[in-house]
Image 1 (tube, one colour):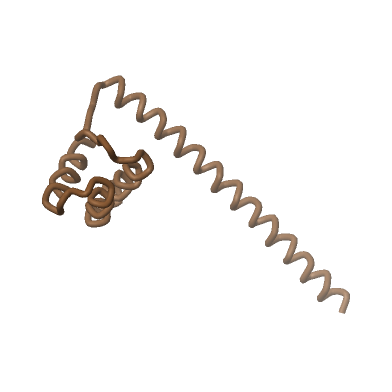
Image 2 (cartoon, rainbow, N blue to C red):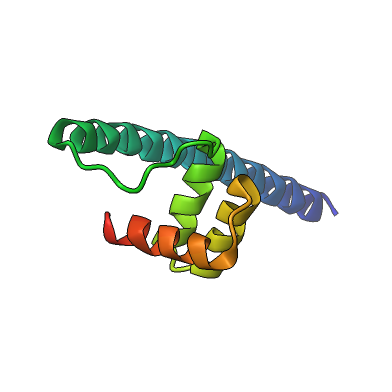
Length: 103
């Protein structure tokens, strides 16, 4: 009976350690992505590259629109743009397509 309890305790400890390691790797990855995005923003600003104007779109919504475009989820990007600006589907699709070609 003692061996079974010891084995279960050892498995539990290993699982906890794996969970801690995975959580640390995820936060490290998130920090790396943020750092790369900041650097990319600086390069884009330095080169003077501009996409279509994003006036009136909150930065968090714009970031989500960009993620949708990069992930080839344009329908979702159009929906987000329409929700943020109130434009119709045709205008939203044109804006998303212009933004996608500016990358």
